[in-house]
Image 1 (cartoon, protein in one colour):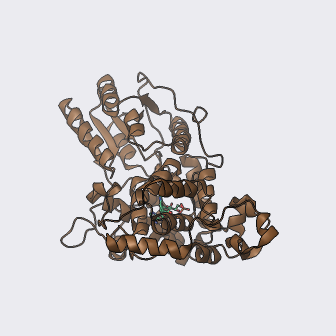
Image 2 (cartoon, helix red, strand yellow; image 1 turned 60 degrees about the horizontal axis):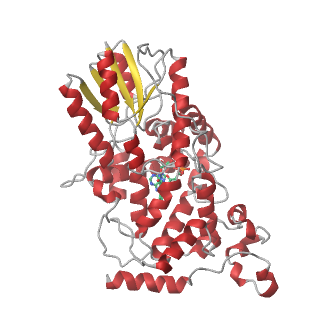
Image 3 (cartoon, helix red, strand yellow; image 1 turned 30 degrees about the horizontal axis):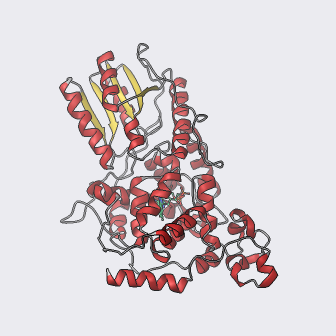
Length: 456
Ligand code: FAD
């Protein structure tokens, strides 16, 4: 008997319930990944993510080959390719990890319908990409938690399964054709400092980071220059690392740092359960505020300056340049750049979210869109008038200015925290720095935002 494992954002062999179930129920398994142009058209593909995906697929193929198997890659429509493999092998089961986006849901539905017509069963597995699957914990009278703290309380008390070991052997039928694995080389516009993808690198990073930085995470997670967070987000996004295994390993280690890290992973599940219940929140305000976002040529120019990292606020520009260079940005940078766009410049959060999704290697519909809504104050819980001041944020989270100097090379000659306020320099000293003046006075930005909100 044959079973198919359809891989999507779960590109690993360790702790993989669909692979385990397929191996338990069948003698041979087809580990299948479909490069579907519909995914690209839906806007989920971006050069950085395609490059990281190529690494992940190559590494998954390697891991399967070590176990006597291989990865089958097909270019085409997902349903058509799965169906072709099922017909070719006579497979009676297809195993798939459950998704939360509207796109993933529609894909599941369509597959189920078509496969059932062919006499093949689709098994959708929960708890492959998340720790606690959406819907497992709900408040009374609702299908999801809209507020984090009570969600976290319930989430933290859920019993978790033991992570599954990687299988020893995977037998793949020999007569199933595979297209070539996509390589990194043909992809244009990849950020020069992009991380290397794949399960092997993700697992190495998780273990190394927990040992070196796990204990200090609580104190250091906001230190922009220290860069002491795990940087596991792209591995989690592609499922190269199991979030559940990360939680179990951190808990085993124990301590305040590990607990704080686990809490961040709870945020990830929190957003996933919101999106699963409200797929429309990927675009529409979760709680409509009827903002009168600025539009027109002036707002367009401000948005362009923000994207390019030329707002004249050094810590904002540093973070935007880190994003361009690495395809990744520190969480504190994401918070303050998002606040700057949506509040100080008062440009629609969707514009910023789109730019993030164009570049972020961990760009994720649930995490990106809902974090943007949280910062913009269109989500459920953010104080609508909380505006992050980029000068104070810079002084607080980059006290010595090292983060700014790392990314804003024009200002590298300025020592200490003075780098956060280059406009204070006068005369020839100021002229020596080829760096723009602030796009807008902070007080003016604040007034504009409040007017827009109040009249809306
Ligand atoms: P760590 O601090 O080491 O945290 C461990 C893991 O916890 C992360 O890898 C991530 O999976 C999860 N996590 C941490 N913070 C959050 C959070 N606030 N919300 C949800 N999960 C979290 N994260 C993404 O994975 N993809 C995105 O597209 C994304 N867009 C964001 C947009 C904005 C405006 C903001 C404010 C945050 C966004 N985040 C996003 C959340 C967070 O910034 C990143 O997950 C984090 O910076 C990744 O770095 P790390 O792996 O070193 O995190």
